[in-house]
Structure formats: structure tokens, C-alpha cells
Amino acid sequence: MRIVTSVFALFFSVVLPTVARADCIGTSQFETCQDQNGNDYTVNRIGGQTIVNGRNERTGNSWQENSNTIGNQTIINGKSSNGSSWNENETNIGGGNRVINGTDSSGYSFSYLCNKFGCN
Image (cartoon, rainbow, N blue to C red):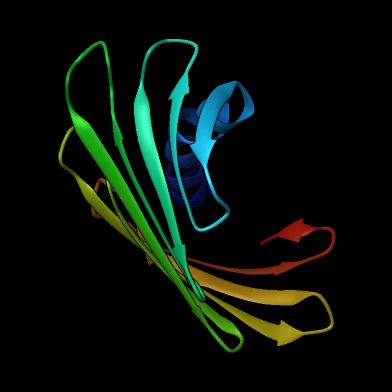
């Protein structure tokens, strides 16, 4: 669980706080946003693909995330602001169940079976 928590912690610490308190301009396909700390990012949605590129105002470092959904599978690749890459594959196997596996930004592999009650 530590590995997935690391990946999700990175995502939630970088993307969600920004999304929750950001001012965005644009359309549902492309928008430019700035959060309350002055961090900038863009969100580009093309069909099942979402590309997010951001810049940390404090450090000047950039980060990115690219997700692509085809059918029941979503593939996510990212690069954190310190340059470490990570990836995640999520497969919806029906009935609210998903298989999630990948490699976190420290290079550790993870794999989980998730349902509506959580992941193991």
C-alpha cells in the first residue's frame, strides 16, 4: 500500500490541491490554470487522452502527467517536479473492480486489486 500511496500522494499533492483552488481560463478541451500559490498548469483533453503540464512557482521545476483511456484500460505516465518518472495502468474488470499496477517515482513496482470498498 505504501507504493500506491506514494504515487497517489504525489498526484494529490501536485494536482488536486491546485485543481480545488485554481483559477482556470479556457474550454473543456483546453484550459490554463493558476492556483493560489502562483503555480501554473495547463490541461489538454483530446478524446480519451488528458495531458497536464505544470510549473511549481516556488522551485521553477515543471511536472507532467499524461493519461490515456482506451476501452476498459487507463494508462498514466508522469514526471514529478524533481524529474522522477512514474507510471500506472488501471484496468476496469467489471462490477466496480479494478486492477492497478505500475512503478512509483522511486522505481518501486506496485499492484493492487480494488473494489468499491478499497484496494488490497
